[in-house]
Image 1 (cartoon, rainbow, N blue to C red):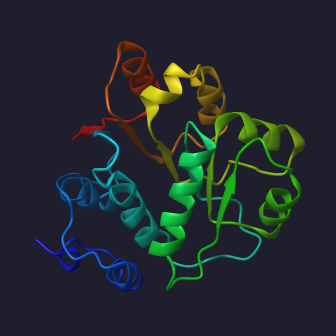
Image 2 (cartoon, helix red, strand yellow):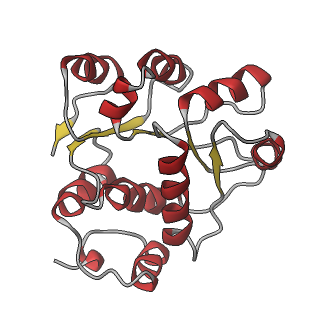
Amino acid sequence: MAFSKLGLSEKILEGVKAMGYSEPTPIQLRAIPLVLAGRDVIGSAQTGTGKTAAFALPILSKLGSHAPGQSPRVLILEPTRELAAQVETAIRDYARFTDLKVTVVFGGVGYGKQNDELRAGTDIVVGTPGRLLDHLEQGTVKLDKVEFLVLDEADRMLDMGFLPDVRRLVERCPRKRHSALFSATVPPQIETLIQWAMHEPETI
C-alpha cells in the first residue's frame, strides 16, 4: 500500500515524496485513515515506528491552508524539548509545499521568538506542558480554536509528573475536537486520561 492510496492531500503527498518515503509503516497504515475520518485514536507504539507521520500527515491534509492571524488549530504536547523540536522539524518537512505555520514552544530558552511567532498567527503549536501554560497565563496563546489535540509519548509525560499540567491544557481546548494519544505503554493513569479527554477512541 502506497501513501498515495491513503487519501492524503496532494501537497502533503509531495512533502512525503520529497522526504523519500513511499510506503507507510504499520501504524501509519492504520492510523492515517482513522484520523482522516475524524476518529479519535490511541496508538500504542514504540519510538521509531513512524508515529509522528501517523498523526501529522492526516492532520496537515485536513488543515488546508494558513489563515493570517490564526489562533492554533492543532496542539501537540510532548514531554521534552528535544522531542518537541524533532516533531516540529518533521511537521515543517511534511508541510513544506503548504503555507501552514508551525511554532515550537519549550522552556530553557527566552520567550522572544516564541512570542513573535504566536502573535503573528500559527496553525500548529508543538510544545511542552510547562511552557505552554506560561504562554496561556501571559495571554500569548489561546487554545479556543484547537481542532486537533495530540498527546504524544503520554507515558513519559506521566513519568515526568506532567499529567496535571496536561489536564489543565486540555481543559482550555474546545470540547468538540479530534484527539489522538500515542504511548509505548498505557498504565491506569493514562486510561483515566483517555476516558476523560477522548471520545470513543479507536485503539491501534
